[in-house]
Image 1 (cartoon, helix red, strand yellow):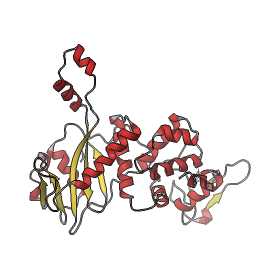
Image 2 (image 1 turned 90 degrees about the vertical axis):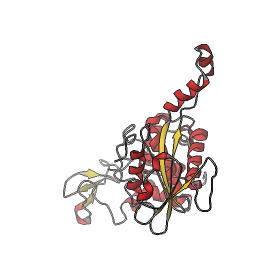
Image 3 (image 1 turned 120 degrees about the vertical axis):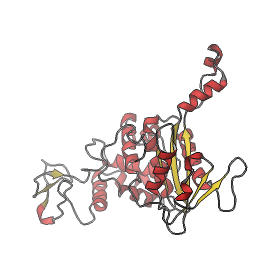
Image 4 (image 1 turned 180 degrees about the vertical axis):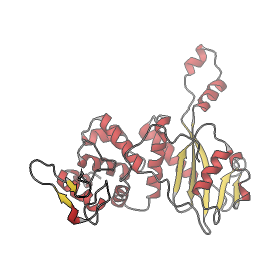
Length: 319
């Protein structure tokens, strides 16, 4: 990894910009405001009065660079730093903390935290084709993040029982629902607490091909009645974990990697930002069969049109 970070695109601003242009504009410069790709109507502005990589569109008269309408837009941080941070996030199997990137790149912690959340926004997989299909099996499950019982001393001083502390902690947990296509992709999102059947099943309908897929879940009441819409296998964890091909080991493996990253790499994640971290781990899982360089290039293909993100905007009931 250290050797790869020594390549020119991570050290030279001009080479970084040219490299990004070649991937964002494979057919040549395109105006992000009007979509104009006519080379005769797009002029590269040169000279001391203009910064490198600046273009002007003859249609709308607006000036633009390759970073306009991407996660890099309006950032004073060097593009080389952005690309290095992007590479570190895609190459680190269980994630990399903002403090670690801050130390490696020499960018302030506050700026690094901001960069990494913008890049997580680019890792989103929503709006794609449904999971499953002819002869495919999908696994669905939910997990709860955070909310560990705290304050043993407080419990002693205020005569609060252990069961009350656990109940209090449970109320603070953040639910995450996920769907995994065996041998393929995973999709997950944070939803509101408490989870109910309508929320869980509406997320399934929005993300699974119900006409050709088979569904495997645990015995949770959230999936009751779903067998009327598609084949539904149930593994009863009170007495078994695997029964032939009926199991949820795939999605539970994803939960394990997610929680290991949250606990071992990030330590503490605010519930308002949790969904960004979930999307980061889902992106890496879906790109697990390609090289670090290919994963890096794949994320660059998703940086357009993803400028804005809002705290907690995904913590809501799926439509």
